[in-house]
Amino acid sequence: MAEAADIDGLSFEQALAELERIVGQLESGQAPLEESVKLYERGAALKAHCEKRLEAARLQVEKIVVGSGGQASVESAEFN
Image (cartoon, rainbow, N blue to C red):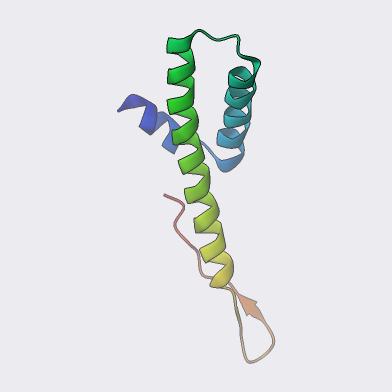
């Protein structure tokens, strides 16, 4: 699906900004029903993408380990 690939390429901030724009459009009630459904579907996909990115960030933070010398080290987490 082209839209899923499009969303996968977005950063968390880009996806969140688009999601906020969609919510604003839906809340205004100005979009026709068919467009509203499409906006809602895209919004749901953006929400899932943001949740995935946040979970990856949470896991990365959990991987921060304080070494015996008091130095913190970080292991990278995948953001895919």
